[in-house]
Image (cartoon, rainbow, N blue to C red; front, side, top):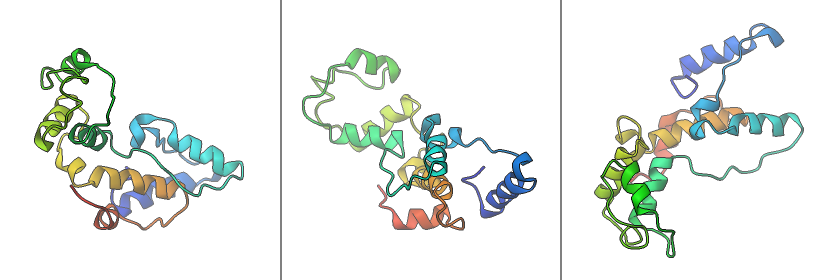
Amino acid sequence: GISGSKKIRDAIHAAETARGKLSAQYLREVTVCGGLPVISTIRTLLNSGDKIRRVDGIMSVAMSYIMFRVSPPPEIARSGKFDEECTKGAFHGDIGNGIGKACSFSQAVKEAVAMDLTEKDVSHDLSNEYAACVLMVLAKELGLDRNVTTEEIQKKSEKV
């Protein structure tokens, strides 16, 4: 898809522009942010003349969850039973009495995997490969460098 190799991205771009308004449309919403309407929102803003100066957000729900578990904020809500069910037993406790305290990185990763928050190969999340793919898609939509690669983005990012 559009987070793949330059050859694939160029082929998609060619299909999208080959026949003007009758060209194919590649539906991107499922490629970033869990299918939230981020891409269509960006397109709507740009088409209405708005300028986007900055994009803030969580690029990887898996990394967000892992960092939350390793260093949780104070005064968080209690939802241990829900979390235990979601993690199929990988998480035990209550947010107010256990999860509110930091856990090990490996425990947080186990929980994220059990909750299906990670890619099938968790190294894609831990190496920022997944986040790099998301950023590449967003960069393309914003009209930034079409030739940027996930590898270049990864090299410039911090890794866990």
